Amino acid sequence: MSAARALAALPPPDRRTLGSTVYGHLAELLVSGRLAPGERLSLRDSAAALGVSVMPVREAVSRLVADRALEVAPNRAVRVPLMSAAQFRALADTRQAVEGLAASRAATHRTATQLAAIRGAEAAFRAMALRRRPDKIRAVALNRDVHFTIYSACGLAPLQEIIAGLWLKAGPVINLDLREHPERLRTGSALAHHAAALAAIEAGDGAAAASAISADIRDAADFIIARGNLPGED
Image (cartoon, rainbow, N blue to C red; front, side, top):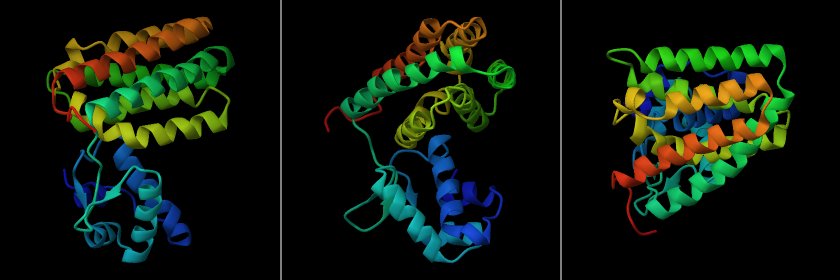
């Protein structure tokens, strides 16, 4: 799916806060894996898809370039960065530590309402994964929802901000796992790890919750790197 088509499917931006809204839309495409590594982003096409001028799109893209979630190629084209295997491994190791901490705190700080939301997110991903013909794009977004619903219960806003920044970079590469290899939805370990994380959070077991989320990130990274789709050198 092209960036313009994906953007056209989103709700129109609030014209009172155009810059932030456009940034949020573009960030959502990255985090949910709807843009792939190397994919170009046309400012004019994106502006047309969102029904805005080029200026707020340019401002949002500049913020995402500063976040290192987008890059400007030598020919001035804006694109999703390509990530080497070594870079992706480093990102995955960082995510294991940071997101494991968030899961651990979620197990001991979650409210009843937050626990219900985590159960719902896990159930939605499970239902999609077990379909005979799952919607690959939706499955990637639901996987993201499981993680972020857990992290939203950690009680630490700065930690959630750090995780959001990590997912801006990881989202397009995670896309290589679930979108390009949909069989992983049923045969991979994500279902088991999500279930283990949910059980640990229900039991208030922070260590087990951290272990489940860390293992989920590690196994996905191992699979993606083993497929050989990422460059071997930085």
